[in-house]
Length: 180
Image 1 (tube, rainbow, N blue to C red):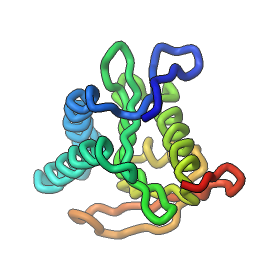
Image 2 (tube, one colour; image 1 turned 135 degrees about the horizontal axis):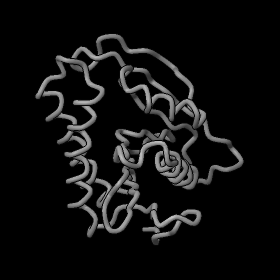
Image 3 (tube, rainbow, N blue to C red; image 1 turned 60 degrees about the vertical axis):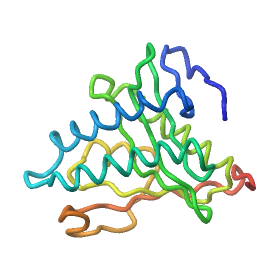
């Protein structure tokens, strides 16, 4: 596991989750998923969908502590989780399953810093591509991914729970990839 490191000159630490971080990461996941659905979800976003997404994210937190093919990267300020990116890697493809930043820290570069660290981890682990699904109505998130160099690959109409999704991906430079 990597050691904590300060990014630039701010007091926000970007780090891989450790066992001691798990409970505060889980609390952040629950709070931010509810906020995301309330803010960007369609009117009919079901309780079943929200419960599924929360339980899947919590399982991924646990897997990140046990399985090297899963990861959880945190942004921490003053002991509080203010951002998270979590997912898995398989067959040379890194997938971002979920990412969020506390609303008070939106548009301050935290999401970009999380994405940069995830990309660094995926380079190190030999991935050739990063991919994710984003709900069409999450325009700020989609904007971040496009600015970060991801490109739309597909649109999934009326996908999970009837929501439309966009599949976005970024191909990693061969010269930066390392063999796992």
